[in-house]
Image 1 (cartoon, rainbow, N blue to C red):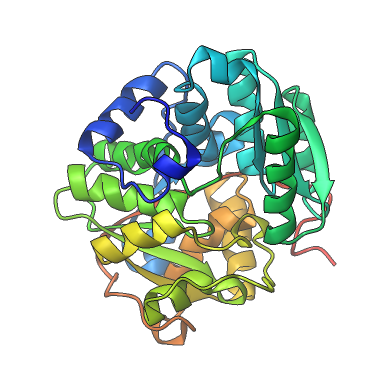
Image 2: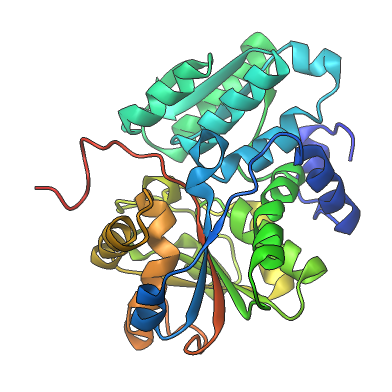
Length: 335
């Protein structure tokens, strides 16, 4: 797609060619994460589930897909000046790794309540960490100041078509590697890069596969935005899923509306239960944000505060376990 300014890329929906280019660019640099199955979860949820284990991805989450697609696509002159982003953790780690692979500086603005494990991981990739108050406005303000002061290039966590194109490769692999055609793909919603990228992948490469977003009831701006037809902010997120505390971006909102994607919400206790069950039964480490899609299948559909999701019983469902980065000293089921 070439290099574009932030103003130029904002609002541009990636087309099929852009998604193909992202796939080719990422192929040598990322893991093709496994698709896991479990008869226990199939019986529990009354469906055939295929778990896309992005907790096994480089940097521990799907975020490396969008970050690498963006950073590797910068021209040499722009890249040499370095990059900056704001992130609660996973996107920050992904940009730090992408910058390390490219051999350029990176500064990651993180909220001061971000898990220490994520802060340490960012520093481990050689990036500089700058902490700020835990609000989206403070994160954006701090990143903008670094762009102005140091001439860094902003790698936005989700409001950039290069990010969406990179994230689309996750759902595309899931559809290709599942042993049957998927009726649905469920993915968590924070800023919206993953869910909108998944929707684009299903639209261009799926065979009737539909996409459903899931977010915590305590951070339900995406549900409200799609319900009301107007983008709403997540002003006071209250959820254990720290990766989903940000607001839905303008470009993802546009994609979700164009493609008719719905979002449902789930309770905090179900998120924690889903996370623990994944550890106990599937034997994979999944952070709270990654457990959110499974929580939607575990809850009684009528009880979902975002409204009843579509009929999922008996269907073939891809479930994106988006990441596995968390502080093991602060597990949510421990007192």
